[in-house]
Length: 88
Picture (tube, rainbow, N blue to C red):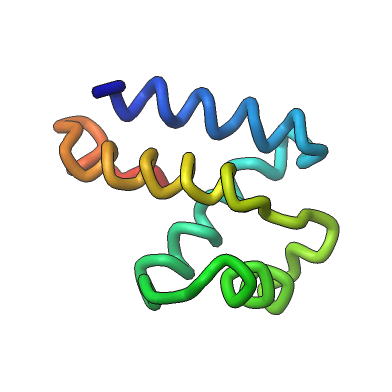
């Protein structure tokens, strides 16, 4: 199992490679996490629609990046530093 820090790094780099500006990655990740926490049953298309509703029109979240984000958030819950402070 990889650490929460590794997942976070991979997620941020993947988002940047897919065209999200470096300064916007944390905001995007926090919005994504908020959507997933408030409604964990959203499917990929519904989540993209929700993100667009929140103003993230310029970025389309692909399925593999979504799975990486979910793994990152799950690893974060078990990581002592992130468990207290949170990723967002």
